[in-house]
Length: 64
Image 1: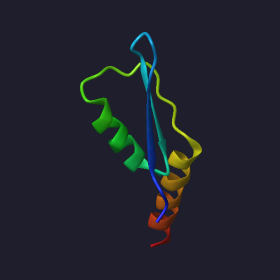
Image 2: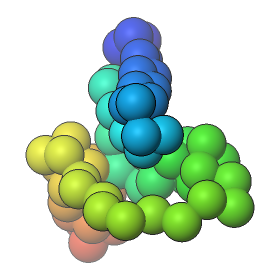
Image 3: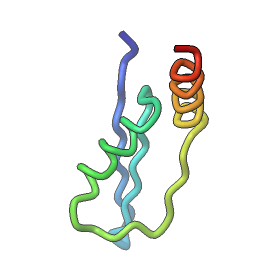
Image 4: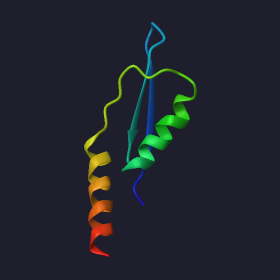
């Protein structure tokens, strides 16, 4: 199983950022939402892994 790492950074102005490493597909988004709580999101960028897992799932569903 691949190691998963969550990195949270908070700058001097109180702005925070979250980096999720080792997560793939929509599971990453679910973890991010859990960590976000009721805070507002100013910017969100999905990594390549998010799309890689999503495409693999679609291909598997079409094959069946």
